[in-house]
Image (cartoon, rainbow, N blue to C red; front, side, top):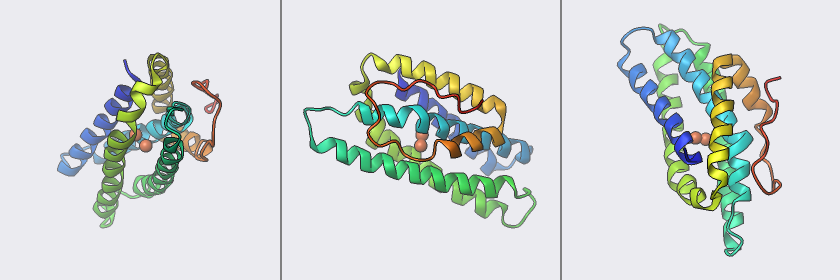
Length: 182
Ligand SMILES: [Fe+2]
Ligand SMILES: [Fe+2]
């Protein structure tokens, strides 16, 4: 499995959850919890593993690119910070509350736009630069994602908060999975 495929699959899972939530055919509270756990686990994985690897994978033959990519990745960290704030507000709101749909729709817009931007402006460019690293990174991301999601929303949220500051110029190569959950 390629690293960016792993992340796109996670995006698709979240997209599907938003579709179900919009239909509102029961179990809304449980689905919000699952969506929140999935989303914070996904953000943690990107912050801890994928974004640092993306910054390391820049093609040295194109000196203009590193600054551009860094700018973009920094914006993605900011999107995550906003999303975490909005997820927290949503999980604290009962589905019957009159502000619930407004909170859900606002979060959905932010998240879906963010996914699209990552896929178009980062994933497609990073994949070939990762080369052989890609499969190793994919396996590490999958492990961290599943482990975090299983631990539930609060653990994922705290893990995502710990890795929320952007790494500037990380060391070359894939970083080892940090023991953020221990
Ligand atoms: Fe992201
Ligand atoms: Fe993402």
